[in-house]
Image 1 (cartoon, rainbow, N blue to C red):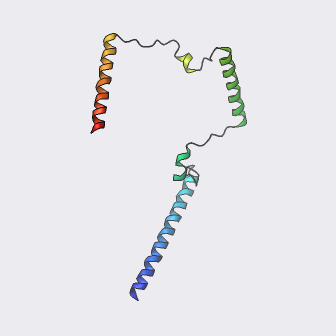
Image 2 (cartoon, one colour; image 1 turned 180 degrees about the vertical axis):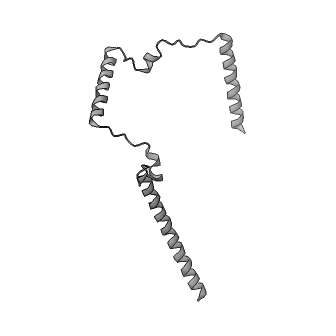
Length: 122
């Protein structure tokens, strides 16, 4: 008789603990939402979804659309706008290495990859 009562109490305790865990999770999601954190459904299930799409005002969408129209018009005309990365790096020269420097770099990379192959075999 005492074992039946003990078993009943153990089952009741497990049920209450699982309910407490569920309530704690709900409290955390509500607190997170109040602090400006994730939405309540953004738990482990949404980890693979990536970032949310930003919401822009109609005025911002118009400004962006106009900038893109200007960008593509300039591209079609053959001149990229000054804000592109290629225009920023146009005045820079590509670094030129001496034959000795190229040889040193090649030797260093051969040594690096040989070590990687040795480590992979182990």
